[in-house]
Length: 150
Image 1 (cartoon, helix red, strand yellow):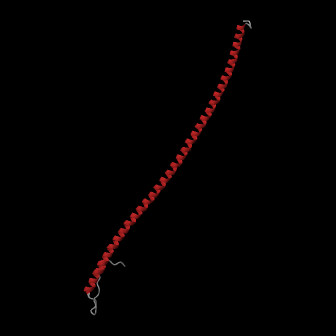
Image 2 (cartoon, helix red, strand yellow; image 1 turned 30 degrees about the horizontal axis):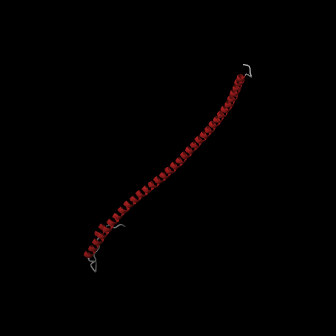
Image 3 (tube, helix red, strand yellow; image 1 turned 90 degrees about the horizontal axis):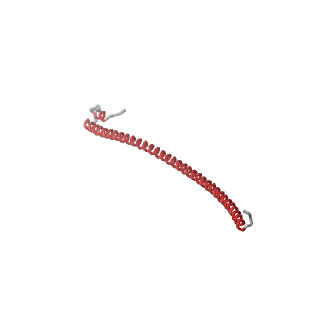
Protein backbone atom coordinates (compact mmCIF):
# COMPACT_ATOMS: atom_id res chain seq x y z
CA UNK A 1 0.00 0.00 0.00
CA UNK A 2 1.43 3.39 -1.03
CA UNK A 3 1.14 6.20 1.47
CA UNK A 4 1.51 9.75 0.25
CA UNK A 5 2.43 12.78 2.38
CA UNK A 6 -1.16 13.95 1.99
CA UNK A 7 -2.39 10.62 3.46
CA UNK A 8 -0.15 11.17 6.48
CA UNK A 9 -1.35 14.77 6.93
CA UNK A 10 -5.00 13.80 6.72
CA UNK A 11 -4.75 10.73 8.96
CA UNK A 12 -7.18 10.91 11.84
CA UNK A 13 -6.91 8.87 15.00
CA UNK A 14 -9.67 8.04 17.40
CA UNK A 15 -9.29 9.82 20.64
CA UNK A 16 -9.77 7.75 23.74
CA UNK A 17 -10.85 9.51 26.80
CA UNK A 18 -8.51 7.70 29.09
CA UNK A 19 -4.82 8.10 28.59
CA UNK A 20 -5.05 8.82 24.89
CA UNK A 21 -2.50 10.56 22.74
CA UNK A 22 -2.22 14.31 22.68
CA UNK A 23 -3.80 15.31 19.35
CA UNK A 24 -1.45 18.29 18.91
CA UNK A 25 1.63 16.08 19.36
CA UNK A 26 0.25 13.51 16.93
CA UNK A 27 -0.60 16.23 14.38
CA UNK A 28 2.85 17.81 14.77
CA UNK A 29 4.54 14.43 14.33
CA UNK A 30 2.39 13.60 11.31
CA UNK A 31 3.24 17.01 9.79
CA UNK A 32 6.92 16.33 10.38
CA UNK A 33 6.70 12.81 8.89
CA UNK A 34 4.68 14.13 5.93
CA UNK A 35 7.26 16.86 5.28
CA UNK A 36 10.11 14.38 5.52
CA UNK A 37 8.31 11.95 3.25
CA UNK A 38 7.57 14.73 0.75
CA UNK A 39 11.26 15.65 0.69
CA UNK A 40 12.26 12.03 0.26
CA UNK A 41 9.75 11.57 -2.57
CA UNK A 42 11.04 14.75 -4.28
CA UNK A 43 14.64 13.57 -3.86
CA UNK A 44 13.68 10.12 -5.11
CA UNK A 45 12.06 11.70 -8.20
CA UNK A 46 15.15 13.84 -8.82
CA UNK A 47 17.40 10.82 -8.44
CA UNK A 48 15.22 8.84 -10.85
CA UNK A 49 15.37 11.74 -13.33
CA UNK A 50 19.17 11.93 -12.91
CA UNK A 51 19.46 8.17 -13.37
CA UNK A 52 17.30 8.37 -16.50
CA UNK A 53 19.51 11.14 -17.96
CA UNK A 54 22.65 9.22 -17.07
CA UNK A 55 21.24 6.05 -18.62
CA UNK A 56 20.42 8.06 -21.74
CA UNK A 57 23.93 9.56 -21.77
CA UNK A 58 25.41 6.11 -21.23
CA UNK A 59 23.44 4.73 -24.19
CA UNK A 60 24.59 7.66 -26.34
CA UNK A 61 28.21 7.08 -25.31
CA UNK A 62 27.89 3.37 -26.02
CA UNK A 63 26.48 4.19 -29.47
CA UNK A 64 29.30 6.68 -30.12
CA UNK A 65 31.84 4.09 -28.99
CA UNK A 66 30.28 1.52 -31.33
CA UNK A 67 30.39 4.05 -34.19
CA UNK A 68 34.02 4.89 -33.39
CA UNK A 69 34.93 1.20 -33.36
CA UNK A 70 33.19 0.70 -36.70
CA UNK A 71 34.95 3.78 -38.10
CA UNK A 72 38.29 2.53 -36.82
CA UNK A 73 37.71 -0.93 -38.30
CA UNK A 74 36.61 0.64 -41.58
CA UNK A 75 39.70 2.84 -41.63
CA UNK A 76 41.90 -0.18 -40.91
CA UNK A 77 40.25 -2.09 -43.76
CA UNK A 78 40.78 0.87 -46.10
CA UNK A 79 44.42 1.12 -45.03
CA UNK A 80 44.95 -2.61 -45.60
CA UNK A 81 43.29 -2.36 -49.01
CA UNK A 82 45.46 0.64 -49.88
CA UNK A 83 48.58 -1.25 -48.79
CA UNK A 84 47.54 -4.28 -50.83
CA UNK A 85 46.80 -2.10 -53.85
CA UNK A 86 50.12 -0.29 -53.44
CA UNK A 87 51.94 -3.64 -53.24
CA UNK A 88 50.16 -4.89 -56.36
CA UNK A 89 50.91 -1.65 -58.19
CA UNK A 90 54.57 -1.80 -57.12
CA UNK A 91 54.79 -5.42 -58.24
CA UNK A 92 53.20 -4.48 -61.56
CA UNK A 93 55.62 -1.57 -62.04
CA UNK A 94 58.58 -3.82 -61.18
CA UNK A 95 57.30 -6.52 -63.51
CA UNK A 96 56.84 -4.01 -66.33
CA UNK A 97 60.31 -2.57 -65.68
CA UNK A 98 61.84 -6.06 -65.75
CA UNK A 99 60.06 -6.82 -69.02
CA UNK A 100 61.19 -3.51 -70.48
CA UNK A 101 64.73 -4.20 -69.26
CA UNK A 102 64.67 -7.66 -70.80
CA UNK A 103 63.39 -6.19 -74.09
CA UNK A 104 66.17 -3.59 -74.04
CA UNK A 105 68.79 -6.30 -73.41
CA UNK A 106 67.34 -8.51 -76.17
CA UNK A 107 67.25 -5.53 -78.56
CA UNK A 108 70.81 -4.59 -77.62
CA UNK A 109 72.00 -8.18 -78.15
CA UNK A 110 70.17 -8.33 -81.49
CA UNK A 111 71.70 -4.97 -82.51
CA UNK A 112 75.13 -6.23 -81.39
CA UNK A 113 74.72 -9.36 -83.50
CA UNK A 114 73.66 -7.20 -86.47
CA UNK A 115 76.67 -4.92 -85.99
CA UNK A 116 79.01 -7.93 -85.73
CA UNK A 117 77.49 -9.32 -88.93
CA UNK A 118 77.94 -5.95 -90.66
CA UNK A 119 81.54 -5.72 -89.42
CA UNK A 120 82.25 -9.21 -90.74
CA UNK A 121 80.61 -8.31 -94.06
CA UNK A 122 82.68 -5.11 -94.27
CA UNK A 123 85.86 -7.06 -93.47
CA UNK A 124 84.98 -9.62 -96.12
CA UNK A 125 84.30 -6.83 -98.60
CA UNK A 126 87.57 -5.12 -97.61
CA UNK A 127 89.53 -8.35 -98.19
CA UNK A 128 87.71 -8.89 -101.46
CA UNK A 129 88.40 -5.26 -102.47
CA UNK A 130 92.05 -5.53 -101.46
CA UNK A 131 92.40 -8.72 -103.50
CA UNK A 132 90.65 -7.19 -106.50
CA UNK A 133 92.70 -4.00 -106.19
CA UNK A 134 95.91 -6.00 -105.79
CA UNK A 135 94.98 -8.05 -108.85
CA UNK A 136 94.27 -4.85 -110.78
CA UNK A 137 97.57 -3.35 -109.65
CA UNK A 138 99.40 -6.53 -110.61
CA UNK A 139 97.71 -6.41 -113.99
CA UNK A 140 98.72 -2.75 -114.50
CA UNK A 141 102.21 -3.48 -113.26
CA UNK A 142 102.63 -6.30 -115.76
CA UNK A 143 101.29 -4.14 -118.51
CA UNK A 144 103.70 -1.41 -117.65
CA UNK A 145 106.63 -3.79 -117.46
CA UNK A 146 105.68 -5.27 -120.82
CA UNK A 147 105.14 -8.78 -119.59
CA UNK A 148 101.66 -8.98 -120.75
CA UNK A 149 100.22 -8.00 -124.06
CA UNK A 150 97.63 -5.29 -123.88
